[in-house]
Length: 158
Ligand code: SF4
Image (cartoon, rainbow, N blue to C red; front, top):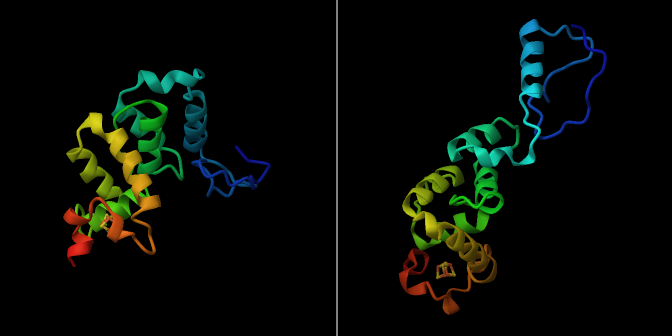
């Protein structure tokens, strides 16, 4: 099959964004894969709710630009499932507190913290850490003198 147009949309979620399409002869296998992908997209908006958490993760991870934080946000806020997204605030605060060492990436931190936080505590703890990071444990100048966590914080003991 020879394509006739070059797509310039560059949608972040498109799995074929890097494909040079204009005038390119696509292999039969690729054509079949694209058709399979398109026909495999469920039409019901609620279809994700029928999937297990691992299936939701696998489904969303197929989309370019969708990372573990976004997947955890969909699970936690969109589906009410006990995930623990690690955004920039959660990452900074938990590192300063000494819960993570310097070798953790945000992705590894999310895996590590989620496995140690009870499912029922994840929503509240995520929201409270984000709020704490915005209001007290700020990126540039943390307000340690008025922080309720100062007595247990590794950053203060340095
Ligand atoms: S004591 Fe300072 S560094 Fe530690 S959590 Fe509080 S504001 Fe952040």
